[in-house]
Image (cartoon, rainbow, N blue to C red):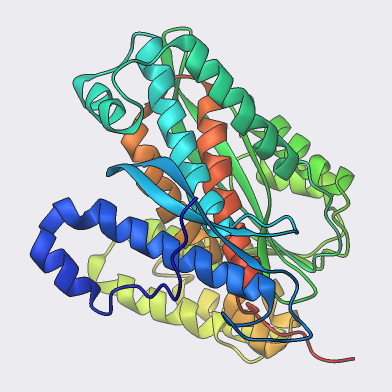
Length: 387
């Protein structure tokens, strides 16, 4: 075991990259992880190095080397130790979950004989050239246990619920199909976002949505005051069945996009978009409904299909006006999940076509688990009025 007293990372990371180029990346990653883990240990101990304090929880006890596999190759980091308590830095484990899930997805493709040269090259860096089905099975079982526990963890009161779906390519019985990935994001009473659940299935959409929503209730989800989502196929019927009494906020961004399909003249698209924005930006529900009536009348003669659509669809996008003004902007669309989808796309496009449904669920869950952990450790997304 080695000890590194008064460890301080290099002051200029840019200089290290300039001097070493891409070859310096493993060393930079090592230094970053070491600095983060030592900061985490100091927070755990409750005091600075060599300081005496009544609030000190334990004593530092050197470091233990550990080699982890990353996308830039193996990196040996120094795990901070303590004398008596149970301490293990989360900075290391959280960042590696999704990497392990991605590696396993590629490994499954490899051992099933559907890998490409690109996959084999990535595996040579991440796993080594020899990858057996036994190795993959053992690794997936270990990771799946942790991910399954997270997916089934108890929930509680959550005033706001945001639902969305995306699709990933999955190979089943030699046929490539679209698997629906359902995601539930919630905002709790503490004002923080968290991923409540995720489900991957090749099954029928309404049945999938209904089963997914019911699982949230069974895990203890309660106190939902508003559901924001797009009008996904199967979602509306499932939502009525499971959350029938909860107001629905249809995503205003998608409503704006959908409206353009009814505007045939390009030169009028901006005008229609501005009219719809004016409705959504109304100070209250009654004013919004008055603006909607005026807009429907405006287009009744020149664009009757648009007028009919506005009258039917736009009211679904006004439920958010019943919320506190500070909450409306954050819940009027499902764009709160846009960063989530961007991160998922960044990871899943490396795989391309998943070898099976389980591999897809494993990677998606690992990414969402890490993002949710970051949100809960960070600042509040919104603030509820004090009662």
